[in-house]
Image: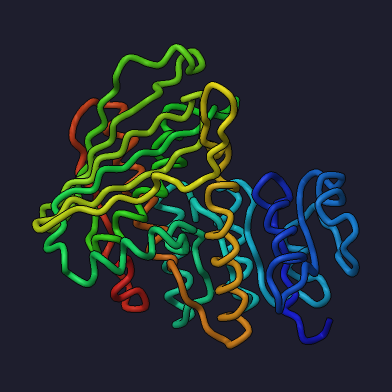
Length: 341
């Protein structure tokens, strides 16, 4: 096991447990060396059957565990800042799930801390950049055959939302993926946000503004709209259509199995993001492990994480005020020149 990259996984919930499984069974070149979770029984369950793993309730203890050479952060967003800074102090490469840090002030502190190191250590988990369909769309837009992008039409639907979900989380948790995807696909910063609220769905918990229609403006005049509906009841759906001067391209229509029986036919609809984006998560972690073993850091960077938090904060203000809110970004450190492009 000495040749394998030893990874400390922080968080053993839904996402963390899936990453533990992925590191153990799917991705070559790495092993789970330590796991930290405030509920030790949950952590033990996630690593059951995996040899050589130490279990901790303190994330810092997991970073200092024997054999740890990298960190995968899958704990709740508010815990990410301290974990990232602790990893930086130890010089440990990191893959951090989104949101990198929920509030932009904290996200900026992380960016400034990494910039002081003078080198990248962190990759942020915007896994749509690793989805095959999104990569094809990015390549098509970058190739210029469709002309200048004018609009992105996006759909983001979940079967149901967790009990703790708030109206603001539709933007700073769910739509944060579309924020990063739009910046990446278009190679532009998002400069303003407007949020429209139709009458809430009868399927939404009381007090939750669901669905929402979020409109972003970009620095070069494109528009991005997102329908986010986290209690649609029937499936997990993510779609994106780019409308350009000389054509359009749409992804996310799905190519799942169609089952035909007497009297009808039915198509499977994914019920979970871990199903819809399973290949993207596998590719993301595989590329992170491979790059880390080469001594490199690739993929979405800390500035991408900061920008997503800043745009999301403007979106939440737009939701609360009912008005158009401009996005305010701090000066970009030289370490992140070209980020989001």
